[in-house]
Length: 510
Ligand SMILES: [Zn+2]
Image (cartoon, rainbow, N blue to C red):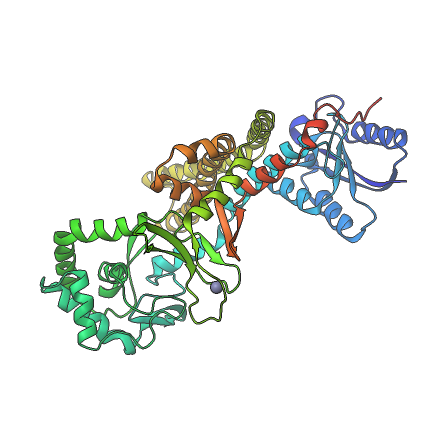
């Protein structure tokens, strides 16, 4: 017989509503277990009206299931009993348990019907995306770093290497290449050289190849685009550009701001020709930058060849940089054929698209009932402190309180407001991402192939970068992998049993 756990919850909001009490929920679940011959291994409950710290029952249940491998089923009255927030939803999904939503007559997990799995999958995806966006600790760390004046990077540009800045990892001058970088700026600032001319000059002067040109780079020579990136990098005069903003850096500059400005003027004067050339070259190749070699892991890059017949064709080959690799080049047309077959399969049937839409709708309901409530709570709390600041100021004006007391309290309250602002900003960002993510899923799950067929090369490149990840090429076979959630939709649209699952809702209650 199946061993199950029960989970019941009551929140203050519904406390007064009838039939939602803990005993009532338990009664319903016990009856259900009895009818289905389930053994109740353990019961867990959260009474949020009791104002205990945290939500111990849910946490205990998760621990219990992790410990007891023979228990992988949860009985719960309905969805909102189990999930108080998006994070719980993801947690339960990662546990891999089957959940019976008794009152809703639904099941989540292995025993679910295919369309329920699909809807649930979309909801998990949306929840996970939201949770991830909300907890961007690494990025926050980087922002702090940037504000302190340390360029957050793991591989600084030519002329710098990783070292220590004020006790933290950051760019320090790389004496080996300092001279090369300074020469580049000085020569280019004269206005006598195009990017190409500058490279030639550097070669002729014996300044290229730099001794430790970025280790992970595949470049053995300096290209025009590399030079262009170096010459427009703020880092060299002491600032740096990060996430759309220029910060003041603590690192040692290699050149003056004045020289940098002069170089920008020269570059902008020449930019019409130079930029266009660089960009056009890159844009000609459809699959540039999205394929890796399946044998040695190096980049598979495009090139043009002219056949003996005089016909031009594009082929892709492994760069084989510092590797022994036996892979042969492959023509672009052969890759295109393979890609179109994959995209065909991403064209999901109308019914599946409907389920995706339903999943998104249910996710939105869940969002309103969970994270939107959390956010409203934070806003309320913030208003509380803003009101206190107002009152405090008034008391100060009325000379009811002393300067010291005012200062202390002012700092305390404004820190609270600032902290809440940071948290609210995260919600705002996660919200925006949530809607963007949803509409992208919806659009692309319906029309990826049609879009691709009609798009020009540049649009196709954007689409492919958005859809694909970790694609590898080995022995002429392109192993295409979709990024989340497209991998998910792709698997589900391949799976034919969603059709049969459609009419077989499990009848849980007699
Ligand atoms: Zn290779």
